[in-house]
Structure formats: structure tokens, C-alpha cells
Amino acid sequence: QVQLVESGGGLVQPGGSLRLSCTASGNIFIIYGMAWYRQASGKQRESVATITRGGSTIYADSVKGRFTISRDNAKNTIYLQMNSLNLEDTAVYYCYADIVSQFPSTRGYWGQGTQVTVSS
Image (tube, rainbow, N blue to C red; front, side, top):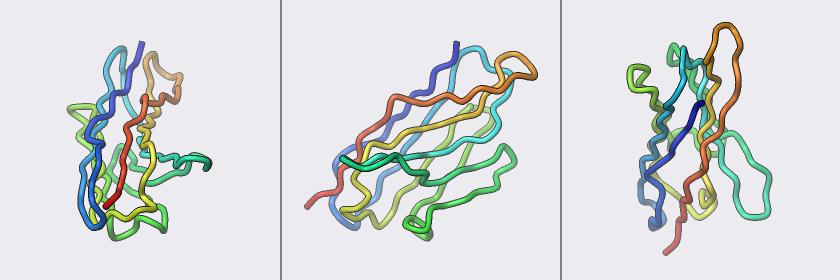
């Protein structure tokens, strides 16, 4: 069994910063790609940033230059450093990971989500 647990969400003023963390635990052989998604109220879930096991990254246009995704493979953890936050960044942020528990089968897992609210 595999579990993803996010932390670091909260309330922040426009222009502020937050750092999200997501740690995978359980029966893990290897973790491939990991990502952050978000879902604002009344909208579809969207990809924010992805990172490969080797560290290659892709960002949504709306967060480029403001958000940074990183990972620590030894800790099975990814991070999302969010700077210059604006009202449109308000959403529930979800962690996602492609995990092999029993080689070679890969399965996608989601975290439970953490709320980020940007408000003055």
C-alpha cells in the first residue's frame, strides 16, 4: 500500500510565498515522475508542474518564473516553492506520483490535497 501526504498549504497574502511538500510512503520500489496539480473551486484539475526522476521539469505557463518544483529521491519527497502568489493561485493542490511497488507494474497515486488560499 502506498500513501502520498501533502503539507504546507495555508492562507497567504497576494505577493507572498508558500512551500508545499509531498512525501510518499509504503510499499515503494521506485518512483518515476511526480507532479503537482491544482483544482480551483468550480474548475477542472490542472497540471501545475511535473518533475522526472532525473530532475527534468515542466511548468504550466501561469506559474512559470514564480513556482519551482524539486524532489529528493532519497526521501521520496517533492516540493513546490510558490512565490509571488496571486488570487488566481487559490486552489486545492494535489501531489501525484507514478510508483512501482512490484516491478515492473507502474501505478499512479494521488495525495489527499492541501488548500492554498491567497487573500488580502
